[in-house]
Image 1: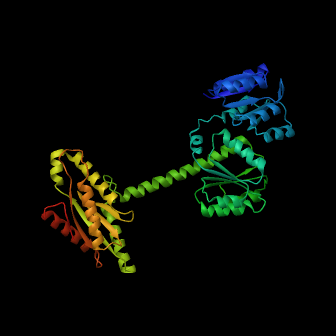
Image 2: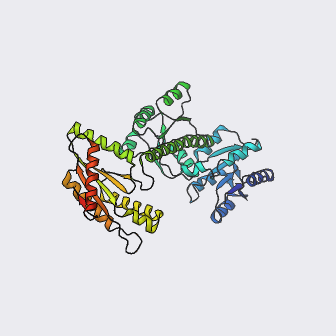
Image 3: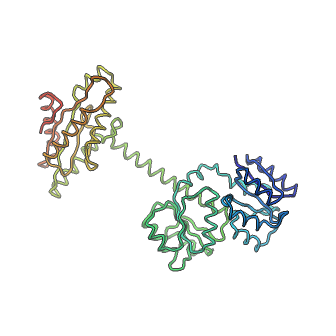
Length: 420
């Protein structure tokens, strides 16, 4: 359960935060002092710490410093105060707090600020599985970003203080956060290099420069977004989520496109290539022979007595047999070989750079593997008959006819054999 620990003595604000916690479906616990808060941390699973500036036993500065050196350092800390001092605000952010909320803020605004820390957002869940790289030569800024990531359970993050260390890592990341002002190079050059190397990744530029021309230039050279320092926690996470949401959408679109492309060339039952694609590949191999003086052979297989299998055991079992034969073919050939379902119970395999002698060896391996396949039915052994032919002229149709004729010769010779 999401639990908020609130260090506050004012009854007014205790009541306010308790009410907001209920609206956020969060459990509320109050502590009147830092020592009481530590005791609560030791026995409760706290999700968020909300503290005022001045505590009964000193200031929140000492409390937060102690937290940063304890096992509770990754729990996000939010300061809620009536103090609007820029100096105090900067001091608290330097300590690693994730938000600074003024008590005079509207109730709804306070609620929205606290709602950000709920981690039940489906995008946030997916964010945690991505790989991140942060390039920033400012140690404090790296620490702030590290804190923001830790609050959101994002742990798969690598931090770099120079372009050289990032490049030498040899790693590719899903998300890059790049400081624009670096000591030995400029962030825009790094961004351009990243865009060449990882065109599909998310690249976010960060800088203390808030100039329209600078921002537009950085976006034009390939950055997906531009965040200014000092970081606002809520804005940082919101913009990060927006960019990652777009990134995941593009990944999903690419995946669906690949799936559609695969479906267009794949036989749905056996997961081998379909007849149309196998013919396209045949023509391509024929063109390679003519152009590069290469070679290739093909194999044609037919399952023996397949009609009898269907009649005795049903068409569903026949489909199982087709898949088992397809699997036997796949495990018997190389990655570069091209296997397809030619039609019905017939299979066609293209063997690039293989002459007839090698093709017969592959064919025998397939025949033997199929023969050893367990059908799950006692005394039912599945076999195949095959024909092997090498491409010697410019007509792939004639090559297929030749392999088909040899396959039928194998059937007429008693089945479960290869002819070439």
